Amino acid sequence: MALGFLFSNSKKNQRQNIGELIVGFCLLFLGLSFMKESVPDLNQTPEVLDFVKTWSSYGFGSVLIFLLFGTVLTLVLQSSSATMAITLIMLSMGWIPFHMACAMVLGENIGTTITANIAAAVGNTQAKRAAMSHTIFNVFGVIWALILFQPFLALVGKIIELFGFPNPAADGFVVSNPTSEEGTAALYGLSMLHTLFNTINTLILVWFVKYIEKAVIWIIKAPKDQENEIFRLKYISAGPLATPELATEQAFNEIIHFAQVSKKGLDYTKQAIAESDADAFEQLRLKLVKYEEISDRIDYEIAAFLNAVSTEDISESTSIKIKAMYKIIGELESLGDSGEAISRILSRKNIHNKNFDTESIQKLVDLANTIDSAYEAMLYNLEAAHKGTLTEITNAYNAENRINSLRNNLRDAEIEALENGGKNYQTSVYYIDIMNELERMGDYIINISQALESGFTKK
Figure 1 (cartoon, rainbow, N blue to C red):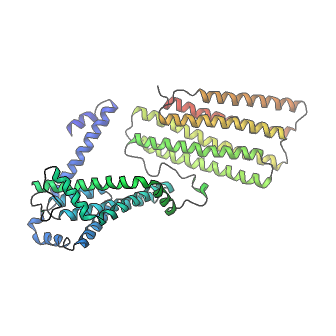
Figure 2 (cartoon, rainbow, N blue to C red):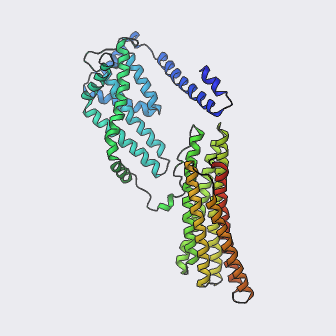
Figure 3 (cartoon, rainbow, N blue to C red):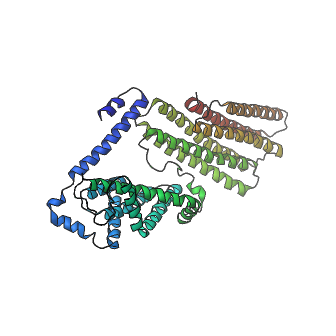
């Protein structure tokens, strides 16, 4: 503990992290020690000890009873690790026999899936499916472990014997003293059972991942209207993690998802510009309004998450990344505003019965396609920054130059046509307003890449 305290007071982040790691392990084992010392000695109250032992005299029924007890205890404590510690203590004190302790461990594996499903109940569809896959994994493991209960315990006992300890699964094995060789063998045996259970279960189910995926998708149905859930965060499903660096990783994954959602708004914008049918345009306009609301919601939720992370003790590099992420989500939210603004300009055009000719529509679509190319460059830079491979953003600057050049050429051509009397003034105003809004989207996109350059560029 003293060594960890000294490290945690260092000015270097790496030493501080090492210090926190050491102190964390110290507190873990200190807590286990206090827990062990605080349990009563049932040998001094034999009637209570006899009552506990009666529950282990019903054969396989006792196995099911202790399995249920382990499940309920894990659910109450909300921690399978704490329940495992209690089980180890009960076994070492001689309260319960070895095979009943093993049944409790199996129950703890079911109990921890219940707590995971409770936590995922307020999350999105992916979080619920992840919790359900956890349930399938552990329940399947408990089923085969119960079917092969005696052979499984015999295997564990043989492994412990190879280490030179008594076989805890053998008939007549009793723990009379926690510090005796039998007590040590029982603790090693229970730990070995827990390790083998998860290892064997993984080796079996790793071949059935696709089937588990299909099962959880069938059990946890996605909403019929997928767009209703776009505003739900995909990677952030709870509060900030205990480790700020891991929390920023979650936030960055969510930002990439935000950018992908935002690009769909640009696709609807391009369709709205080219749409001449009034009913079809109205559907597109409503989608753009909805995507603007979605971008506002995602921006708010990611910002709230980053605010909570910022209150933690974070390193200087993490602080720089968080500042860059604030900038990025603000620009992504502005992209949603621009899409909705273009829909309003088009609505005013339609209300005043003004129409763009085929050539004007094609020019606006060409400009929107250039914006689309800039979007692709921005998404590429986001992925590169996430992987830690971003070194420069030349692709973003090139895309921005193409947008500005095309916008200037189109605007100059429109003004010249208007001065020569070849265009309707009000129609040209709508045309130039849309062009300027598209160019503004290009500005937001380059700002995102610049924020990545300042916060995530690999030096």
